[in-house]
Image 1: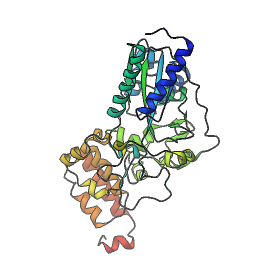
Image 2: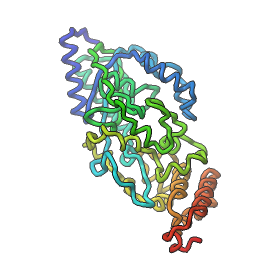
Image 3: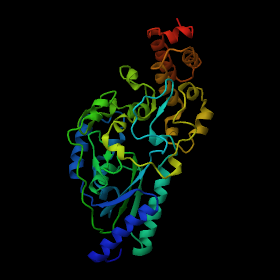
Length: 367
């Protein structure tokens, strides 16, 4: 580790941020490792049980909020963000999606971000070492117990909003975060100020009322948790509230006033693949496991597995119109080997049969 004076350290910090932008990151900031306030918030969140089945959130104790325990020798964290909003998908939606269309969270319509960001953070570290010589470092992209939003806030990349996502005044919230832990004693950036004010749009729009108070998220009710993290059956009382969302939910982002400033991504890997930005529920429900694995290769969606993919779509079909096509698609999965899939299929069929018969439904012959 080189012995840098204050002027040299500041010049290196500025150079690191320039290199980060050259590598495709929208912004970078540097912070220390004191996360005491955020640690207290995390421990309270865990005590309330808001993590649900995400037991890994408490498995590592306070290592998540103490970077030096995760990677000994860490003095600073270089936090980076990378925009992911596809150019053809608006940051804020005024009109609902077409009936029968599946909703996939914007971050998942393209390729998975983990490998791409890890590779570029590693390149950033190598550029730093070309100037400083060997340093102690570790790269993280949602790959270890790291309080990434807290670190990003302390590094000046934005503030944690009332919906618990990171917000930036010039970029909204549609971005990924990554970290480079280092033993370089770099100058730190000023913590970002909060700018939510009296706005409650995210709390009021949440379909399941998962945002139980400003800066408080009960993940057990969050649609992103229910459709991605939860491995078992989706609670009966929450299924009707999920609508057509089959992987994640962006409602608290689409309603946020700051997202009028969201920047479209310049990264082609984050553009929609396999029509996931406009695919029909029936089309996706017809994918067999081989097709699912082939079309979600390199995608964050693959972690679901085919079973939970079908579980989610069955719920979405049950929340849709009682058309003959929907009933036929569901009926074809009634004998699926998975009890989880069968139960959600039966729920969806029952729900469609109980819905008021609209003129459109009667025209399809459903009585």
